[in-house]
Amino acid sequence: MRKGFDWAAYLRGFHDTTPGVTEAVLSRTLAGGHTPYRWLARAVSPRAQLIVDLACGSGAMSRELALPGRTVLGVDLAESELRLASERSEGPWLCADGLALPLADASVDAVVSSMGAVVIQPAHALFTEVGRVLRPGGVFAFTAPTVLPLHPRDLVTSLGVVGRLRSLPRFPGPTEITGYKDALIGTGLRKVEDARERYHFEVATPQDAEVIVSALYLPTTSARRRAAAVEWLVDRTTKEGPVRISLAMRRFVVLKQPVATRGPEL
Image (cartoon, rainbow, N blue to C red; front, side, top):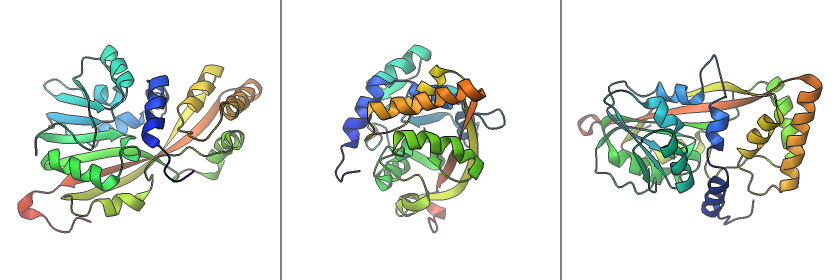
C-alpha cells in the first residue's frame, strides 16, 4: 500500500456505506457456541459498573456487556454506526475520538474494544488515553484478527478468496504482538493476558458470501475483484454445500496498576 494512505477517509467511507456489516459477520462467527463478543465480555469483571466500548460500531459489544445497574458507554466516530446502534438499544452512545475521550481521569472501571485497536492508531496514544480514563485496577480488553492458531486446512477457503481478491485485508495498526508490547511502556498499563481462539463463519447463501466479503477492509481492491471473490464463494456453496471460513482472533487484556504498587509494565 502506498505510503501516506488516508485511512481516516477510507474508514469513514467504509462505515458510511456498510454500517453494521462487522456485527453481521461477528455475531455469526462461532467457536464452541460463543462469538468473539462473548469471549471479549468474559474478560470484564461482573463488578464493573461503568464500561467504555471503544469503536462500538452498531453496538453489539455494548449489548453483550449489558447488566442491570451497569452503564456501557458506546463510543465511535462513525455517526452511521451510532444511528444503527441507537435503533438496536438505548445506549448511551457518544460520537468521539478514541484518542481524546471526553471523560474524566480515572473515571471508568473497564474499557473494551472489539477490533478497534487495529483501527485507533497510534497504539501508544490509544493505550495512554485508555490508561488516563481507567481507574486503578481497571482493565482494557480488546480483540483483534490474527493468523495463529489457524490450521493449514483452515486456509484453503481463505486463500481461494484472497486469490480472487488479489490482495489481503489490511488494517491501520498491527494485529500481532509487535506494536502492542512496546506501546504499553510509560502508560501505567501492564499486560495480563494474550490469548487466541479459532472461529468459523459459515457461508451457505449468496447473501452470506456478499456480507463476508463486504466486511473486509480492502482499501486497494477493485469492485470487480470483490465480485469475483463473492462469485467464487457462491459457486463453491452451490457445488459443495455450506463453506466454512475460519478466522483467528486474539484477546489482549491489560491492567491499570495502582500507583503505589506499579512495577515493570511488561
